[in-house]
Length: 289
Image (cartoon, rainbow, N blue to C red):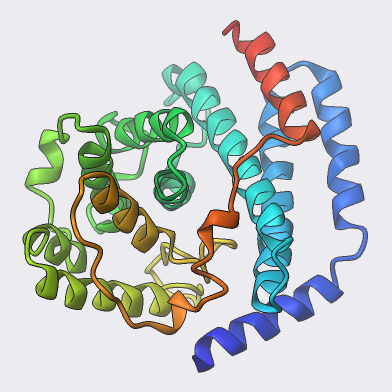
């Protein structure tokens, strides 16, 4: 619990120092959308990520204060992260052939965000958006150069989320996942049909989540460092959702991350606000979808 209190205090301080951030990023987005260029859309993605962090933090703080309106901010954050991911992924696919000719950013920095987004979308049963994110995440794991190979070898959470998506969608599991070391997440797969063993595995996942909710430097890139994924264990709720849909029992899990406030996911309704609609329109127009 102490880690959660400290993290929330950090968030409150950050919010107090972020006056004017949203107006500035919205101005940038207006300018970059007007450019109608690939570079402009890449800049839009960067601004969306900043806004997603702002609204994710604002939402988490409000939820911790018992304000149900905080879930609206979390929804906004997730939609902004969704469109930032879609823009980055499409830009990479359109320019990856230039690698070796000029420096083209790959999707390494988007891997954990994609895993967290997929968890959240499964948790609230948004199959349409989840399918798009799962497709991008599968490409990250299988397309040469999409993610730095040395980075990918260390990852466990993101391949696990594709396994969970295959159960959720009742589709095939990527063959590559079967040979991967999934660490603490392998325990969930192994104990899937054992309720008591699964409860212990999920409590272990909550502890892992909490220990990887902040980037303290070093070589390891923690999966849950971006709000709202740091204090909302959406992967646990995704597992609950999948089991409920399959008619399986949902084990009782004890963790400070699963407080009454943060567990009220029935309040999380993923909808597009005016900005998300504008970005979607620009995305479809520019890429001809």
